[in-house]
Image (tube, rainbow over all chains, first blue to last red; front, side):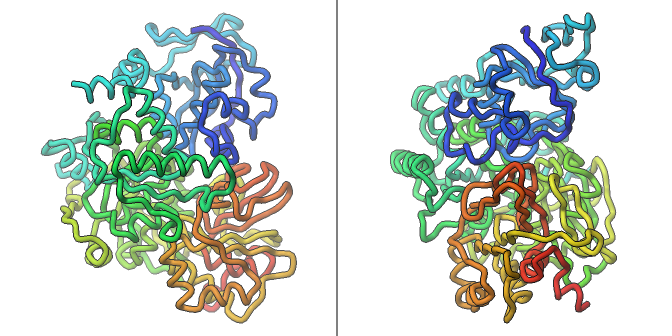
Amino acid sequence: MKGKAHCYPRDHINTDEIIPARYLNMDQEKELAAHAMEDIDTTFVKKVREGDFIVAGEDFGCGSSREHAVWALRGAGIRAVIAGSFARIFYRNCINNGFLAIECPEAIQKVHTGDRLTIDLKSGKILNETKQESYTFAPVPDFALQILESGGLMKTIVQKVKS
Amino acid sequence: MGSTITEKILAAHCGREIVRPGELINAEIDVIMCHDVTTTPAIDLLKAHGNLHVAYPERVVIMPDHFVPNKDIKSAEMVAKIRRWAKEEKIEKFYEIGRHGVCHALLPEQGHVRPGTTIICADSHTSTHGALGAFATGIGSTDLAAALATGELWFKVPETILFKIQGTLRKGVFAKDVILEIIRRIGVDGALYKAMEFTGNVVDELSVESRMTLCNMAIEAGAKSGIINPDEKTLDYVQVRSNESFDVYTSDPDAEYSDVIDIDVSDLEPLVALPHLPSNGKPVSEIGDIPIDQAWLGSCTNGRIEDLRKAAAEMKGKKVAEGVRMIVVPATSDIWKQANREGLLDIFMEAGATVSTPTCGACLGGHMGILAAGERCISSTNRNFVGRMGSPESEVYLASPATVAASAIAGKIVNSNAYKQD
């Protein structure tokens, strides 16, 4: 998984900032994506390219349970969020969508916007090609990896209901 | 080693004798609440995955509340879609306009919250229902779809922090001030992934409604849930509202907690959380002159009848300050009617406030009191994030209903008469 970093090193970036409630009368990923991170950075959507990463501080995604936050980021092209830590419901929403949420406090200190990163899930490392560094992240829990590999929670639910 | 109330409820709902923090379980869900904003994606997910149906329609309660009465065509389409789906799936518990209300106020009021049960809703303030000794937690729309299709959901058993709240609350200091103080101390991620269990003589003395205020804002400290062991007040509240049976669980004296935090609230003053985090609590007496443009009274945190009574007591015979807009939003239709019978709505209107139909409304920047750039609002709600009630350049200050009402009269943030007369 390779992409460019977009750094928002602040703690407690909340879901109201990721996708403001004024857009919650919509629920389609493409519509939401147009407004991703709008209340933090109005140029975010223009800057992001498919496959990029967000790098942020502690407690990313706190506040409202709106899964729209994950969909908005994914729709905008973001493939993973790397943060010091994640708020609980946002983290659940990432897992359930098979969207990567990586806990790596070291990356928050060292990565800058524009750095080219590779996330290697097998080795548990983020490689910073721009700075020629690597950072170890907290292992993604096995059950989360299983959901990720099966393509999201709903895929496993379908199997369960059918059996 | 004993178990906490949270561990006991979760064990009982996954067919186990005991569960311990960190374990992954699939728990049976007793009540699945759906509201207007987060349910349509769940419906789409169910339809897109082989047209899955609702496993137990009798466990589902639908309470559109965020953008109702519908504020625009898109939100109207969302509720219309939910109505059609509810009919298809034979879900009977649908709280239509006229019986509607803010879901976390309406669910317990209408008898759907019972001790010992598991409750989920794709809404972060689901923690409110722990006030009645239930395990209640916010989840996302995919979780909602999964629970609708199977009647169960995955959880990691949380560690619990025990908050022993002791002392004597001064007159004019309320549950809202207590929870703002707790969040001030531990921070907005101070209870991340954990259950917050509230105990102590102050909690015992609080009304059931005030206990809901306490548990409601557990999420503002990052918690999975807030919970209070049921007592006689809990049972009295539930038994007049529900005929269904339930099991009462309480924490063992030797239960293990990840932390025990003692808080003596005897010296606590009314607080206001300054922008832009709920943890920015400061005593009202220390903030100096902060003029306001709007005062907003309502929400799942503080829109219940006792909240309206406290606000009305501050406003009776007085006038909202020149240049200030005050918006009162009773949280449910029954609360609206009760406030009307008690003459509270007259007091608000005579004072120059306006009274709205129940809705989440401007609490989350939906409608009914959105802020313009540069405007400042004191609010009885739960979040003061950037842009929460409107423009990203507006400001929200969180406080108790008494402080909100007193501030509307003064035109700036001030302590209530209830407090000053102590």
